[in-house]
Length: 294
Ligand code: AMP
Image (cartoon, rainbow, N blue to C red; front, side):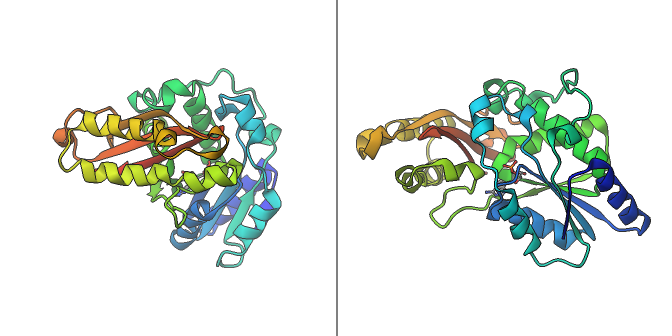
């Protein structure tokens, strides 16, 4: 595996791969890699002759300065993890650009209409976030012109937003949505998990436990009852089992939505596919997760 920091070297390598008729897979990440990222990279290596993994903490997708500053950066360990994956010689290229290399021109004037999928849940709560995601993903698409791009369902709304971006820019790229990888105790793997205290980390699996119970409840309760139950269960969990250091879950939202339009539904049968998406604060860390109901 090779790693490059220069966008022009990246495009040369991609052009060479294209000349050889190789298929190209792209896996965009912000580094601090874990098994969730590695599952995407493994799949890309399985399905493509040449794979670009980008590692770039994208400043313009953070609406919260502190979150950007505290975002874990472990580039040396990341490159070791990626290099250790089974791969053919010259099959994998890591792209680790600086901000200037990623954005040689100002991005302030770029605004994508990402449609209604960007207007719910994370959209209004993280102003500018999805536009920042769209800008970086578009730039990566331009630099690598992949046949396939790999994203995790952990960020379920992000997948829908990128589908919407692809419809707008009309690039012939297959978006491959990959299932969430969880720790043994059920917590969705996330780079931000490393910021949880030991007490918070051991309590955090309650999020997934609650979502799983919600799925069972959906057999006999209506949508709004299940939705409120999830929010209340997490918000009052510290009353039921008091935690050290005043730890508590602070749910920001839990929405039960059509898995294509991402609009909230009122009845289980209102959509062919139904998912629940949650954002919840714990120990100063914002965690997101999702579960499929139908
Ligand atoms: P990030 O570095 O957080 O921007 O994530 C890069 C890609 O990895 C995104 O497409 C994420 O959805 C995906 N990803 C992150 N965590 C997981 C996970 N636990 N399971 C599957 N995919 C994940």
